[in-house]
Structure formats: C-alpha cells, structure tokens
Image (tube, rainbow, N blue to C red; front, side):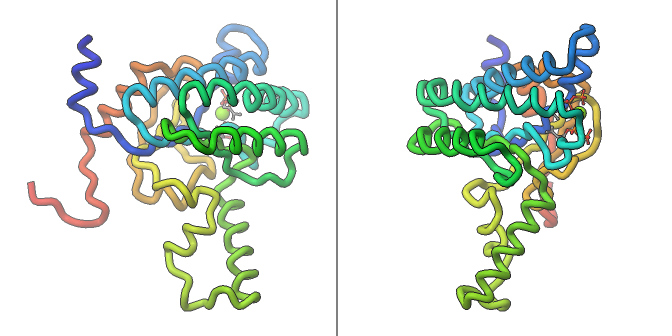
Length: 244
Ligand code: IPE
Ligand code: IPE
Ligand code: MG
C-alpha cells in the first residue's frame, strides 16, 4: 500500500532503458549452468514489462544480446538464441493480451533467418498496440547502429535524396534503429558493472544512470521503484542552469 502511495507522488520517467546483466553470476551462485541464468533472465523480462506498465512507464528498452556477445562460447550463444526464439513466439499472444507493442533494434544481418522472421512477425502482430512500447536490443551495438546509419546517409546523399548541409541531429536520429523512440530518461544497469557496454551511446547523452548490484533475475518491482525514486532525486539541467 505504501508503495502505491509513493508511486503516485513520483515523476515517472517516460523511457527507461535497461542493461540486464548478471544472468551468468545468478546461475553460478546456485551452481547451475549459465543457460539457466538466461532462462530466468528472460522470465524476468516478462515480469519487468508488467511492472513498468503498472507504474506508468511508456517506453522500456532492454539489452538482450550485444554485437560483442558472439565472443561467448558456441554453446552459450546457441542457448541464448534458443531462448530468444521461444520468447519471440510466446510474446505475440502475451503482448496482445497486455496491449504491448514490441520492437526489435539491432543488426538483422548475422541472425539466423528464422529469428529474423520471428522478429518481423512479433513486430507486425503487435504494431497496433498502444500500451507499453517495449523494445528489445538483439545483436545490437551502438557503434554498429551509428555505422549503419552513416552508410545509409551516404547512400542517400549519393542518390541525391539528401545534401550534406541538410544533415542535422534530427536527420541523424531519423536514421537510427531507435528513430521511433524518445531518448531514454533513465538508464539502469544491474549486477554492479559501471559501464554502458556499447548500449545506445547516441541516445543516452542526457540520461540519468542508475547502477545496482542486484543481479538481473532478482531485479523486481521494488527494485524498479527504487530506480525511479533515484531518478526523482536527480536535477536534470540539460546543460542549462536552474534557479532553486
Ligand atoms: C546478461 O547476463 C545477459 C547477456 C549479456 C546475454 P550475463 O550473461 O552477461 O551475466 P554475467 O555478467 O556473466 O553474470
Ligand atoms: C552487456 O552485458 C550486454 C547485454 C546485456 C546484452 P555484457 O555482460 O555482455 O557486458 P560486458 O561484457 O560485461 O561489458
Ligand atoms: Mg555480463
């Protein structure tokens, strides 16, 4: 009850981005294989979507697999891809039930064709939903995203669709995978690492950062509210000066 009262007094960030980290350590602590941590991590993504919608967050964007994560063992990567396969398929019904729209950002190239098809199907089938706008970063790297955008801009310049003078920050933004999303207000990273690991480097230029030691599978509603409370204590100046 107390939590609910608090919630009403809080300013809720419109867009929360999460680096969900610590699945492997969560499993290790229990002497279980890393894959089990990923399975539990995926379950927690579903729960956190519900909490986010509950407390009134409009956009939630989670980092599920980075362009650097291919460096892991073949077994671990295959395990994560299988969890994603199941997640993408199961999400259709659940998202529609919860009025949640799902988008996927990241490089499609390099993903198995059936995964690309499952992504397209999930995006298509949830495109009319007006509740939580949920985005999953799969095979995502910020530098890769910017490089793809620059290539596309160069191509459009060569085709005569765009001139160098016309390239503004808004134009660059419109070539990014996140073009339909506002910038994150709050970035959360679990598991105690204090780095951004190539996540949304352009978009988090003015985000508030919240780091917690909690491992991703243990990150619950109370933790989310704690992060939102932290956000409420920040003084966002965006380069200006505030008269207090
Ligand atoms: C995050 O958990 C999930 C992915 C990066 C796919 P990790 O697998 O990185 O877990 P730790 O950091 O090894 O504990
Ligand atoms: C970041 O976690 C990527 C994802 C959460 C998908 P990592 O565990 O891969 O990051 P590093 O290697 O610790 O920077
Ligand atoms: Mg990690």
